[in-house]
Image (cartoon, rainbow, N blue to C red; front, side, top):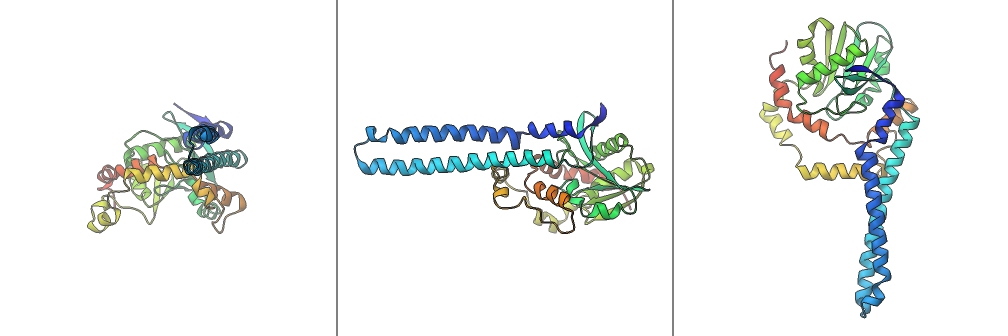
Length: 301
């Protein structure tokens, strides 16, 4: 199944987003119920307990519960509304295409040949290139895209290994009519993915640029293995995701535009990007690093 989805349809995805629409709605409803029950309990204390210290203690405890429930529900609701408002007023540039039944986002600017294709590092999306892309687009055509599960690209099931990611990029470029020659430019883990692409589709590739690129099976290096460890425990991921849903980063000011060298629109896009957390997609790619390494270890030089 192939095709293109307009930006209006793409925006509907945000109104169906579980983490930043459905979950905050549930949190708001639960918060309202907790506050109502707590207030009802506080009003009935005089009739239940004759001892004043018991009534005062429970009222203090219930007041804390009401305060916490109000803060959490209010922050989650404000964060959800702010994200929806932002996306309605600042749609991401580029286009959404359907590749093998899944939405994929790509943004192409400039003109000329060869076309430079930008692939972001783990946890990032096309927004991370918004300082680099305009500079490169002065010379030739430049396309930045979101891998599955990042930015505006729909998540896909595991495995998230180099072979699958390279094939998905190839399908996206065909849909976007980005034909060879292309120069692949990959940051960090994308260094492995562009190796795979160049091996599978050598007729399309004129060159590659590695921006601090990962190398196949680097995780077997003792020094890197010690640095990487086993990844965060599951509870850390759950707590971090909950913090993003509730809107803690927004309360801390992480959504404010900070990157130098960007125009106002791009700075706002990047600032808002910091307030969304990709969880499953980077974990799936991290879990597939051994598989990706075996698929690309013989590529080169």
